[in-house]
Amino acid sequence: MTQTHALVILFAAVFTNNILLSNFLGMCSFIACSRQVDTALGLGAAVAFVTASTTILNYTIYHWVLVPWNIDHLALIVFIMVIAAFVQFVEMFVERFSPTLYCALGVFLPLITVNCAILGASLFMVIRDYSFAQSVGFGLGAGLGWALAILLIAGLRQKMTYSRVPKPFQGVAITMLITGIMAMAFMGFTGMVTIE
Amino acid sequence: MKDIPHSPFHDRRPPTLLTSSEDGRGMAAPPTLGKHTMWEAVPPGDSWAGHGGQRKSTALQRPRRSPVPGIGQTVWVFNQGLWANNPISVQVLGICSALAVTNRLANALVMAAALLFVGVASSLFVSLLREATPRRIRMIAEVMIIATFVVVFDQLLKAFYWDMSKQLGPYVGLIITNCIIMGRAEAFASHNPPFISALDGAANGIGYGIVLALVASLRELLGSGTLLGYPVLSADWYTPNQLLVLAPGAFLTLAFLIALFNAVHPTGDERRPT
Image (cartoon, rainbow over all chains, first blue to last red; front, side, top):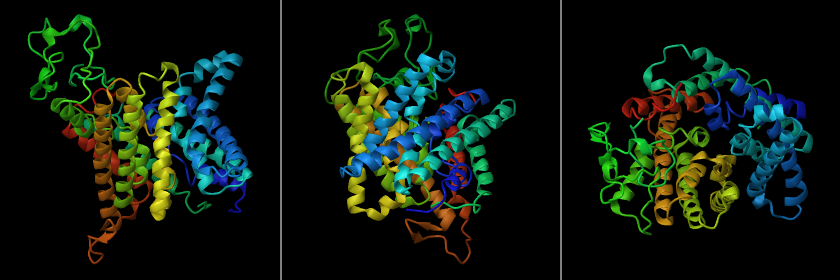
C-alpha cells in the first residue's frame, strides 16, 4: 500500500493524472456533451458526484465483502451493479426532493451509468491498492478532474462554433485535436506530484 | 437525409427508415449513395426490402426470421461493421480503449481480441434471450451478460498472460462500459436472430480491431521505432518521437485518422453537427 497522503492523491487525480486527459476515460459522453458550457457543467457535476460516491461505496464493498469472502474476481460485476443501482437511487432521490435539479440533471443520469470514468475510478482504486482515505481523495479528484476537463473543452468548443474548421475535421476530429493539445498543457503539471 | 442505405434488419443506428409519407412510390429516381442508388445498397435476394415501390407504409419492416443468414445479409453486416459504419472511425464509439491501449501494437491486438470475444458472445446471448427479457430491465440484463464475458476474458488473461494483463490495467474490465458492445446489443442483437447478431458482433469487433491496429502501428512505429517490440526504424537515423507514446499523441493520432476517414468516406460525419 502506498503511503501518499490523500490530499496529494486528490491533487494528482485532478491535474497530473487527469482521468480524461491522461487515462482517456469517459470519452464517449465527453465528446457527445461538450458542445456547450451549461451542459458540460451539469454533466460534469453529476459525474463528479457519482464518481466520488461510488468509489467510496465500492471500496467498502470490495474490502469488507468481496475480499473476506474470497470472491474478488466478481469485482467487475459487483462494481457495475453498484454504479447502476446508485445512479438509479440518486435519480429517485433527486426527483423526490428537488424537481428543479432533477430537470437539470435528468437527461444526464442515464448517461452516467455507462460512463467509463466512473467504473475506471473504482478499478484504479483496486489496482493501486488505496487505503480508505486515499480512495476518498482519489474518487473526489477523479470526478473533479473529469468535470474540469469537460468544462475546459466545452468552453473552447463554444468559442469555436463560428470558426472555419476544415471539413474533414468538423465534429469529432477537431474536438479530439483540441483535447490532445489540452492534454499537452496538462503534461506541464507532470512531476509536481507522482502517483503510480 | 437518405445518404445511408436502408437497413435490412431492425437496426436503430442511422435514422434511415422511411416514413409512411415517403415510401418511395412517388419518387422519380431513387436517391443516390455515391455511385450506387439507395436500393442497390440493400442486400440482394430479400424481396421485402428490394424495391421502394413495394414497401408497405409501416415504418418498420419485419426482418426475415430465418435462423441462418443469407450471403447478402452477411456481406451487408460485415460492410457496416468494417467500413460503412465502422465503430471507431465513423461512429466514434468506444474510443477510450482505442486511445489508451494503442501505445504498443501487441496491447492493441490483445484488446481487439478481447472486444471480438466479448462482442460475439454477448451479442449471441442477448439475442438468444431477447424474447425472455422484459423491456424495463433490458439494459441491466445486457450489462450483466456483457460483464460475465468480460470477467471470463479478464480471468483467462490473468491466468495465462499476467504481464499483458498488468499492461492493459483496467481497460479490459472497462469493456463492460464500452459503447460499441452496449450499442450493438441494444441496437442490433435485441431485435435480430442469434446467428446474424453474432456475426454483427464479430464484424464490429473486427472493424474496431483494424482501426486499433492502425493507430497502434503508427504510434509504436513513430513513437519508439519498433513494431511488436522488434526494431524497425533504426536508431541510427530516426529519433523516436516520445510524444506519440504519451497521452497527447493518442488524441492527435486518432484525430488525424478520423479526419482522414471523413475525407475518404464523406458519409461519415455529416449527420453530426459541430
